[in-house]
Image (cartoon, rainbow, N blue to C red; front, side, top):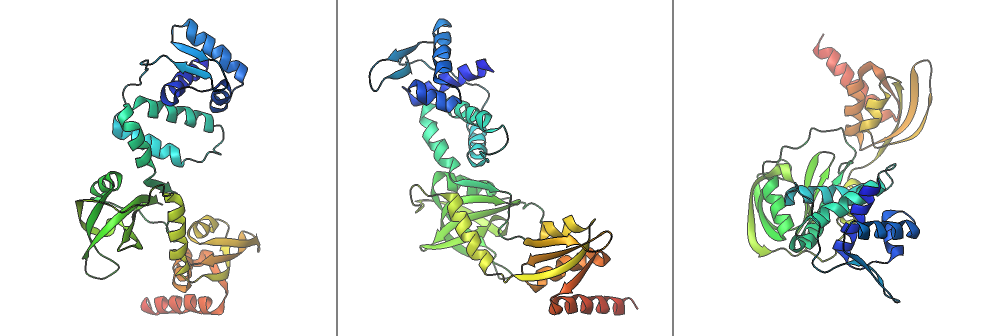
Length: 319
């Protein structure tokens, strides 16, 4: 454990330059006294770390000294930085290890690539929740994702032939903002003629990367942009709140695909009664119907009637 901390200390000084004992202690999550002992150990081992006295003093490495990590390509380093930059800092016991790993990854890159990698990491986002809470879908097969990603990282405009809904595919020229993977589906966040646009990558039929630089505001927070667009998109789907009886063995299937559970209580042996939100009547009907006899709509009446109507039509079809 101490060897890992010593390496992290060297990489911090290599990447950031002079740092005080307090700053190092905060980064390494140890006491300043431990940092001083580690500095002494590094000096004894021959690492050229020295102290600068005074108000703005601290510890630094002799100019020209570097240590390196091998085995990481620039693509692999970028993938790790992207993953680490979006990981939950509250993951039990993982924050110190993750911070240490990110320092090593960034320090392993050639100096000319460090800033560009960090910037590129801010152009991609991975989220477990989808655009809206609908039944889980299989991950997108995105043959053109590589071209889109390259343009996003390079900050260039894209010309895409896009199939929106059931319409014929049409050409659009857009300014990429970032890429988001949400519940296995890839989305390109972009602007078109100054207006916000979100495109599902799997619906792109052709893609051309243009030589023109994209119009992308500096310092843009991709996660905030995604949440704002997701909220606007979800607002276009009317909510429907229903009371549903469901077998306890089928509860997980229903809850995983609905929007939100408000209340839940037992309702007889092996049954539960849930007050639950769906994304409209069609969404609720599809989920309830998929559960068959393991679910019953108590209300509202239009949803109960829709299930009954479908059941009657199915029974009539089969005689």
